[in-house]
Amino acid sequence: MDEVKLSDGVFEQIKDFRHEYLTEEQESLIDKLILNEELKSRYKENGLCYECKQPNTGDYYCQACKSKRFQQNFKNWTSGNHD
Image (cartoon, rainbow, N blue to C red; front, side, top):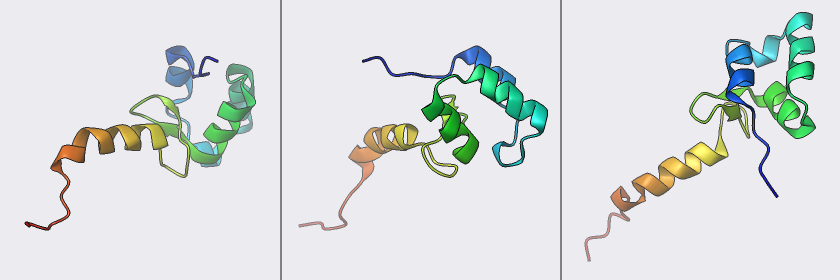
């Protein structure tokens, strides 16, 4: 099953909105632009990730991007043990 994502066009139209303080006009536009209910709910609750251009999975937190950064930086992690 394909993952549903926001298009670049939708992102460009809503990127400057403050998800926690949407006007009625912005709310109406969001309802028209984001048809997938899960994405719409995530956007309204958590805002956008400006790295991957998708709704955050938590309050100002994107699990996908955080996981990717962790994987890329894993080789630099150490337990601190020098045995």
